Length: 220
Image (tube, rainbow, N blue to C red; front, side, top):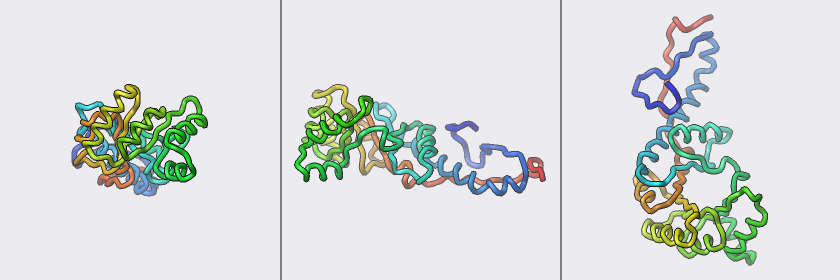
């Protein structure tokens, strides 16, 4: 089968020919990769199906298995999702800890965004994490390219999305925090552009694959 194909229980997905000892040496490692990546892709596809009919994109986070990030994010793409930042250099995301620290040092929200803009390369987007309607509006008015609505109630999120569009029709709006298959559809219907889900990679359940031997494919 090809990457992204849907398979049925007990359906063979690959045939390996070669040295019996070499295949056995690599069996567990190969299955570990296959099981984890298949689990990620399958879970992502469920989220993508849940938001079908909306404009929302399902994206991953940097909450990946250490040393496995590129493969985790590849599996997300195969499942129909999209990738958020691979590393810190891919974009500026101003999170709550940054905001709290800078506010304690006398910076306003608009000053924080302006400071980031002055120090960013011309191609980097500025994203800021907010929890309230007021901070979301202030962020867009201050020039943020992307606003991340963190753990915001649905009714407040819908109002925030609508009002941000009237301020800047080009702003991208992301929802994150507390998102699961039970509520992702309703979140998508608020009109957000992006829904980031840490669970796609940080606690995915691996799928069960096994290697079945057949003497016709083995050599000494």
